[in-house]
Figure 1 (cartoon, rainbow, N blue to C red):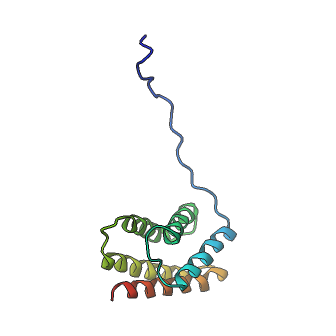
Figure 2: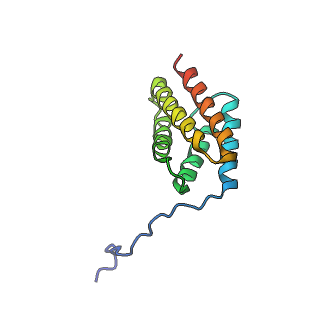
Figure 3: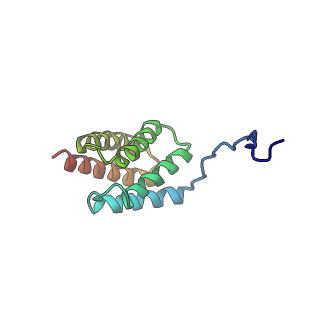
Length: 134
């Protein structure tokens, strides 16, 4: 046997498991996102905006609440779009507007303590979309 030959990798790769997210952690992400957007849109894709998108993707992936599939998909699309330096602002605005509408829709049926903050987040996303479409 040749000692320089590559060793075949037959080991099974573990399937990534979503991390468990408590209601307290989800609330913290929601509060942080509202605080971030309340100060206007971040100037660059990297930094706090990118971090919030990654956090939301993790929270949504771990959630067992119904009605979040489209939001989960759009958050992932937003992360991809913002990582592209050639992304057009109107594309980001359209995605934010859709995300806003979906967030407001989910807020209407959200349990007590989430309804208000989710509705607020939806309005902030709409405001962000409008500011980009100008």
